[in-house]
Image (cartoon, rainbow, N blue to C red; front, side):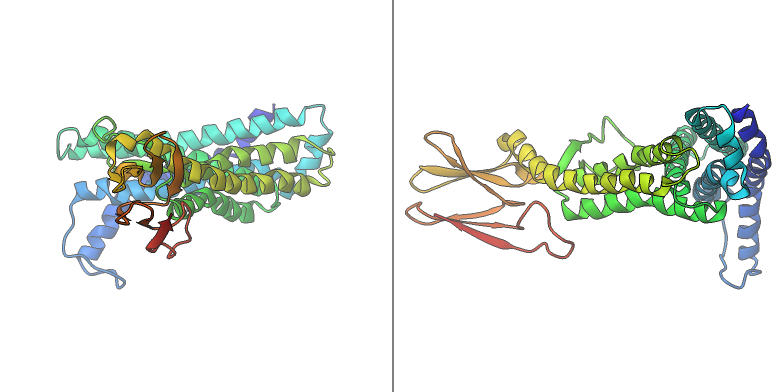
Length: 363
């Protein structure tokens, strides 16, 4: 019964989403045509290619529409009853709050997938009529668009669920959900910039030839923030399904989950980033360079360009004496081999703009 109620409540939004998906491609063509004729004061174009529009502009706008409707579906399901006063009525029914929460989550997810499939099939139909500009382009772009759409919809649902735990108005919850959904992405970019050499996974472009992933490595800081998305779902569940049925103290319960989750990601980054740098150096010592001392008593081994960093080793025992920062490229020994100067960029984690040459002198 709860699922049926949520499904009926979202019927209008679901139809609006499908209609928008249908109208979006011809609207883009109409705007391009108007711009080519000089009818739009803000901008103009000399010409346009319809196929190129369906490869660039239309997919981008569809992704934006999917994000928006995912936030609206979620806000309506989780905050709509609260804003209209129906939440108290539902809490009085002999139905588990967990059952209500699951019904809302299922309805939101299905609505999001319906919007995704509808837009994707419409785009695919237009593209098939236009023809594949290059053999294989249609299939690759189609699956890329579907995958990107599914990811952004699920991410937005997670962020919006957490937002509705703190915000009662559905419209404000939409804005809050969009902000929270973008938070892990922004944090990933920021943390990756703090420690770009802290590599956790290496991607072989030949074995994984996805145009969106051209990097040969993924920093730890780019991965950890995405743990916040399941934390957002936990915030919603803990807020709605735990505590007093009347909902008193729900925001505090949500904050007790969200706050430690954000703090935990930061702590994990501070722990794992230096460990990842050293682990990659250890794994790639054979591909790096060797800087032996003149007396051959010690040597510095680096992990190569991708791993960076280096170790000062006792050549007699093989014991690691000291780890140098990233990247370890310039090494100069004294004539008697008693001292060594190493030029690096410093620690494994640096603030943006703080990367600069640093000379370590070791006896």
